[in-house]
Each structure stands twice: as structure tokens, then as C-alpha cells.
Image (tube, rainbow, N blue to C red):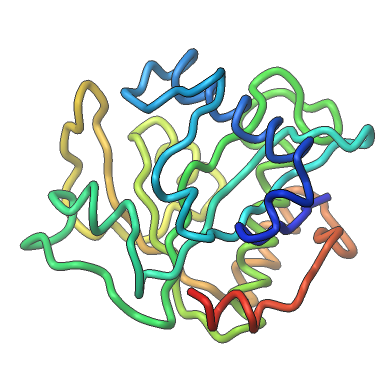
Length: 214
């Protein structure tokens, strides 16, 4: 099940936020060896101060086993402000109809229902939730930057999106920027391959105030 938390509500969910940042540290710093800032065993950066929307995958004990961070492309984003070299002619992606997804990660040991691997139920539920939210507010695409291993996994489940430019090396990691269409058919495909039925979002606060603030 996915829990939505607005950035300005972080203080209301200290346990979930703490688990999310610790998970990000285990995935991006410990396992993938990315050059990311670590503070008190948290992976956290300046984009966490931009009032993002967090999608947290929760297990049946209410622990965070996956997370994703969402920001509108009309403000600061990683794809425009950190990874612009992955874009054609470094042209920024700027549209009220496009969001950026970043820091997508899943506990590599156990997924939401005990599955192992990058595309456990937790990962699929986060993707389904992001698509459903996009449909709800009229988005056309999500953009993201993947390392090539993650991009291959996304291809395997049929939601790799369209490359915005060729892969390039960022630090010691080969990365690619992609645009993924928001569509009813895409959500149905994800539900089919994961045999997921019913509601996937546990907490669905209204998005209007967050969108206006963003």
C-alpha cells in the first residue's frame, strides 16, 4: 500500500520520513555507491526542501519498503538543475503537465509482500500510484533519470518510457533521462503484470493546495 505525504507534512510523519531517508541511504550510498550527501545516516538533498510529494510503499507492519519523490517541472528539479547534460541541447523540461520522479528505490531484501528483487509489489504499486495521481490532475508525462541497470528493468516490465537523449556517464554511473506517458492503459498494464487489484493508495490527501504551493 502507498502512503502519500506532502513535503510540508513531514513533521506529522517522523517515523515514515526517518525510514525513507535511511532506505535511500542504504540503496543509493551503501549499495549503488552514488556520490550523494549523507547526514546522520540519512540520504537527503536540497530537493527534499522543495516541498515534494512522497510516495511511500508500506508493508503489512507499516514499515517503509520503497519510496519515490515527485516534483513539478515548473520549479527546481534534478533533471533540469543537476542532469541537464542528459537533455537534448540541455533544454530544460518545463511544463505544468509534467512531473519529475526521483529517488525511486525499493528495499532490496524484502518487498511489500515479501517478494525479492527490484520489481516487487512495492515498486509496481509506486508506479501505479504515480500514474493514477497523474491521471487525476491531468498530467501527460513523468520524467526521470535512471541508471542503465534500472532502465533495463523498466524495459522488462514495459514502462521504460522514451529516452530524451543518449546515455551519458554521470560520475561513475551511466545514466539516461526518459519521459514516461501517463495513461489509463499504462496503469492497467502495471496492474496486470503484478496481478494487483483494488486501491493502492492508503492515504490520498487532496493535491490542490500542494499544487498551488508548488
